[in-house]
Amino acid sequence: MMPIPVSVSSTASAQSAAGTERRRVSYVDRFGWLLAVLLLAVPAYAAMTGQPFLVVLFARIAIFAIAALSLDLMLGVGGLVSFGHALYFGVGAYVTGMLAQHGVASGTVHLATTLAACAVIALVTGAIALRTSGIAFIMITLAFAQMFYFFAVSLREYGGDDGFALASASRFGSLSLGDSITLYYVATGLLVALLLFGRRFLKSAAGMTLGGIRINERRMRALGVPATQMKLAVYVIAAMLCGVAGMLFANLTQFVAPSYMSWTMSGDLIVMVVIGGAGSFVGPLIGTLVMVLLEEGLKSVTEHWMLVMGPLIVIAVLLSRRGLIGLAYALDARRERSRASRGGAQ
Image (tube, rainbow, N blue to C red; front, side, top):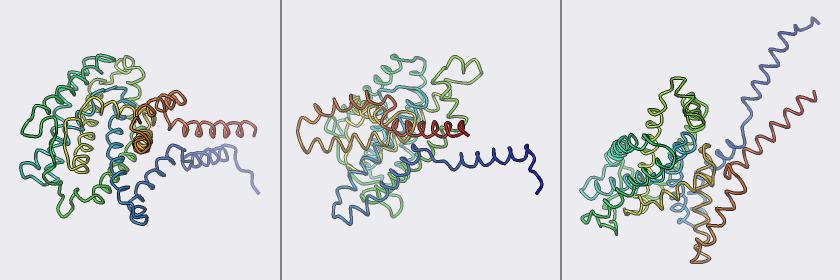
């Protein structure tokens, strides 16, 4: 048998290692896929167990997870801490409610108008807010959200502070978002699509560039990167996604209220992202699941549930600086160290 040249054998082993690396799925991705499969199975489980309320509960989780994912695009990837992100959640709900109030039931019109309204508002407010950074940026986003909140309160023809019922659900041909199962699959399908997008986006050139801007914006500007334009683009895209979540939530609750765009809603979204783990896209889904299920569980036990939930949130943040998804990152790091030690031993 002829000996294999060293260069050929090393190349083959490198290709084999590269193939193994490609096949190796991280624990973060595994958690994401597991959660996606479980969410898609909820309607079947609810039908088998005779618990239809589970569809509504997990539809709410999916919708809030979409809003949290949109915030993570800004906060975790772009480093933009917005305390007024719920503004766009409320805009999506109000656009849907107002159009339905005037006899427009087309879901296509609802969606297009929501996207356009959120894009215009985000473009204007983002261009102003991004002239600042840090605490000033946080306060400006909060100020804009509160401004629109009080504007919604002043709309007496749309219920004012009390809000108003949705006149008709969004319809896409024969499909109506007034049906809980249809709404559930639409929300969950969009959520899974965003998780897939996020997985690819984090490894793309745009995602890594945004990460560089978050870490050292001055250096990225010196390299010729249009940092402000990229941050504004992320701000607008995140606003549009959050507006879609607001549209879905209006169809779920069949109600629209100014509280959808209040600062407390923005705070809840930030907590969902931080608890789950910012910058991972899977983390906000985990954070939303934990927050909503914990809230529902504590409400069934005591009316003072917030006194219990607050310390639990603090403990979760202190135990893992990277959020709950940090546990998956730790497992990935341990596996890599184990692999490296085995390679060194050989």
